Length: 243
Image (cartoon, rainbow, N blue to C red; front, side, top):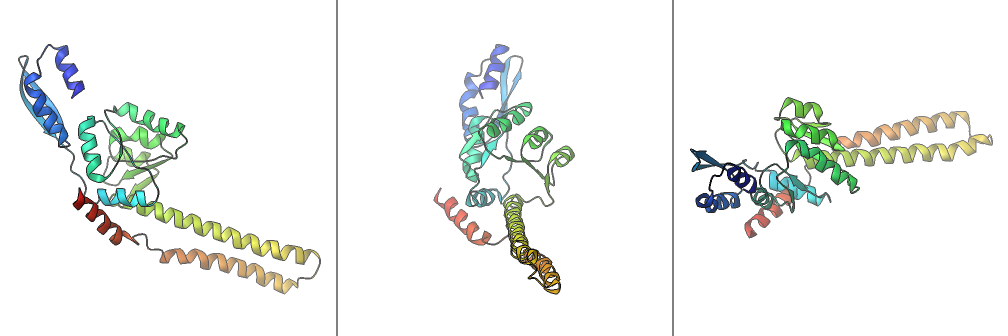
C-alpha cells in the first residue's frame, strides 16, 4: 500500500477514505489497487493468486527434507505474509521488482546457500537463470521453461520435493557404485601385481564388478518418490486445523 500512497501523493490525491479498506483487503492476502478519476479515489480493485491445493503439503515436504523455504514476490508485504502463513512459509521477501528477483537470489547465494528457484512467469526467468537450480512449472511461460534446468511436466508443485528425493536417491546409488567399483579394483590389483591372481578369476571379478553396478542401479526403479506423502498429508491437514 505504501507504493500506491506515494503514487497518489505525487498527484496530490487523498487516500484517507480508502486506507482502512486497503488494509483489510491486504490482510486477507489480496493485492489492492486504487482507482482514481478526476483526482478522487473512486474504487478499489483487489486481486489475489489462488493457492494450489498441494502447496501447503509441498512446503511441509520440503521442510521434512531439511530445506529452507523462502517466498519471493512482487506483491505487497501484508498480502505476501498472509499467503505465506497459509502455506507454512516463515521468511518472505516482498515488494520485489521483476528486475530485482535475480539480485535477491544472488544475495542468498552470497550467504553460502545453494538456491533452487521455482517459478512459472516471464518475470521469474532472470531469477531461474541466477539460481543454482532453476525449476520451471510446466504450465508456465515458454521463457521460464527455456531458462529452468528442471521442468515439471505436470502442474503439481508436489513434484518439487519428489524431484529432490529422486535426485538424492540417484546420488546415493552413484556413491554406492563408485564404492564397490573401487573396492573390487583395490582388492584385486595388488593380488594381480604379485602374480597370485588367475587371469580367469580376474576376468570374472571384472564382470562381477560390472554386474553389481548394473544390478544396484536397476534397484532405483523400485524407489517410490511418493513414499510417506500420505502420512505427511495427514500431518499437514492436522496443522491446518489447528490454525
